[in-house]
Length: 223
Image (tube, rainbow, N blue to C red; front, side, top):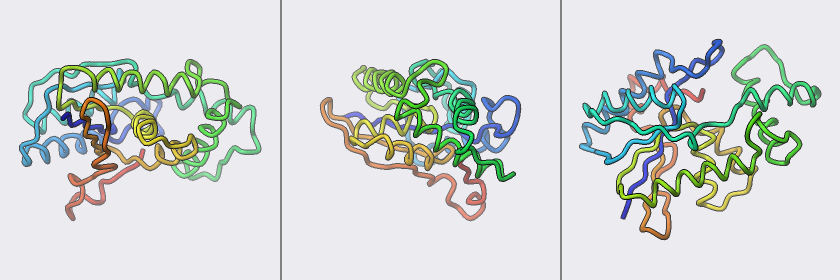
């Protein structure tokens, strides 16, 4: 029996020129998760990340907290979609759906939801590289390659869209449900599957045990 652990990256640099970097809080969230697992004596036999800075940085923070000198393996198939490649055509082609209330985080949530819906329906054809179907295919192919490998306790660090895609594929969710799921996954949240070589069982979703103590609850973030 394999235990597959999925972790969304820590808080990235929302609103900055380069989103693909963890904020100071995002780095701390990652270390806290590793320290939490260290206290539980939880170990992994393989660490895989998407090929993005925020994925690598999150894995490094987790391993720091675990006092583990493992080297994560990057896998491009676990990269997130290009959100700017979806938001730009939404704004240009569907201006009536574009929301700008001056509240950046809330506006981003609603605009991203609209863009993902159009992408799933093919109204927005691609994010600059992937169609909805090709994104789902590359993510699930990468996930199954990991699960069918020799390692029994892999840790996968990626993004919310990737994790939601994996969970939705395994649970048979509709695109609209996958979109809702992706927008609910919090930074450094943990989801876990058991795999017997044939069937998958979801045993946890969006778990934030490492951030639930009174001194850490205010550090729970979505973006």
